[in-house]
Length: 297
Image (cartoon, rainbow, N blue to C red):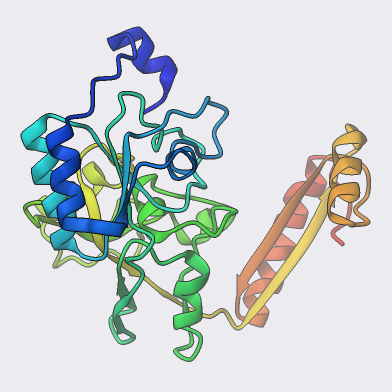
């Protein structure tokens, strides 16, 4: 992981001087889309992790794979770190520039490249958010089900192998990407994708497992293809309360203006056909009842 504790123990967390020649080359190519201002660097030197901010030396806002390739090439020539940046909603600390370097902001790369409804896939640029992706799909009857609890960018979700409350049913983030600077391709599915096609070659699947979750340390993701699912016919959400630790739920009620029973609980959501949802709910309620859970609400 890219956080201060690990680097302090391994490398002393030493920041190297930022080469003036590199800064000039980046300014020449990106003009107003490169920033060294304190405010911009502070914004890109933190995420939702508990670690202290670690600011990059410069932030570049890119719009294409070719621009990412140019930054990677220039930084390699000057031996300067690069740090991909999405929405800054991750919890891992990997956007922190522990040795300085260039933060590559991918938020302007948010186009939908293609929707392949018959193939149940969509190809997008990394800066598009989870909600924007599903908005683009609203007329297709399909949706992208992974929900990490934030409106994260798809590139960031891929880099962290994002999961969430729907992972039991739909799995975690699986994708195909193209990388900078050499555009090698790795293609989903990951091992949790129960709908994997036999035609996918093993080597490309292995690349996916290598790069998904690498947190920006192995390549910069510039194109992603993710599997879609049909919108479920029915969705049922339930609450199952248990008999202690009421203060935790009381805090949730106060924060979100809810009226949940003030005791430990599990939240379930069932997707599928009307009959399938009822069957799933009945099965889970039987399991929770055996473990002293209350009736479903």
